[in-house]
Image 1 (tube, helix red, strand yellow):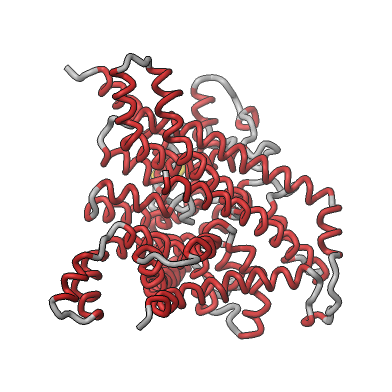
Image 2 (cartoon, chains in turn red, brown):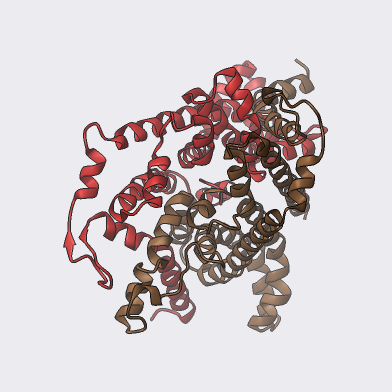
Length: 274
Length: 283
């Protein structure tokens, strides 16, 4: 017999899982719906119109997806490059004024980047960065760099640095110690940070609209205009495609990281991935 | 190589990005809010935009709406998160991680679209109500989108942010709180006493810290209210954006003034969060 506590807990899990699943129900049904009149609970006819729309040659979706992937990929790489040394300094060493620097790094996570982006727009126009992919890439760094820096700070804070000392005592150069000891050890944390940076950039809508000026079309922009219109099939199909990287990232994170790790690391990032 | 120099060098790239793109942007917003816009021939500095914004009834309506949406979303998320975490604390770490991580990772826009298709007047909820004979036509179902109470927006935020707080609570429950609770149980405390006197005091700083983040985020977020909110009043960031897009360039300083106010309010929340987090680290 299953103990009562365990059974209660399973019931709780089932309820929470159902609540989490609810918004996906209409998204899946509408994606493959042909005809779905009120008050039918499920579509009366099915169709692949949504899927055809995605793959339509010369359609907007492929181009927008490519733009989103390229920008998010570049943003993730840049954020790691910039965030890794910062995380090392903040998590690996003790020094004066660290509290102030942490506050500065934390600010762009909490103060909405839309405020600073509207402020910088005029300068971007003057510098010729407005309406370009480079400009969009740059403003996406505002939310992603602090995230990667903070995630990597917690990664470095958990380490003791003893192995590096041993390596140095045995004659390794600082660079060798970093390359052969530090880097392999922090690699999973770096992967998580990169994944988060990718997802944050992938989810950006308003920063891209503001700086890209409609010139750089990304997936959330297509989703937004579909959602403001009146075609639930196209809207739902785009929404599922837009959600796909998040689902894949979750699968990867859970598969390759210890559950506890996915939990706590994920925790730093959250609430804000979009 | 000196230690301090090394630290400075390691921090330089990140601080450069934040300093130029974020702080620079905020300073530019501040300058423009003071009416200094050489591009359109305005070089006189004044607090005119702030006077206009703060004296505008539309701004106050907008501020109240923003506080209401952020407050309600945060409050409901926090209560549900504690209940959810308590319900899931003994289930497998892996499964509850998936269940809670999914909404955290899914973009807000997807959540908003999914929730809209559930709660709209022809949505899944209305169809269920019709199947149960509660309503006959779509318009008999309560309007939960573009509505005065921002139900659709709040539901989307609760769906997205509740799991974030729940994960924080869950981590605390599986740590020290769990051990202390066992001790209390051995000493004869009942379930309510164990929660109120032992578990809650241990998990509450974490809950407050996570709630602060959620409040600041829902206060400054744009997408969900832009998609699911009514056209007046709008949430503050949407108001700033609408002013910014106004063809009349004279609206620019007002848009920037709203941005500066949003930044100030959220920065205060960031400071409070950091204080709390540091105390947490010490405790």
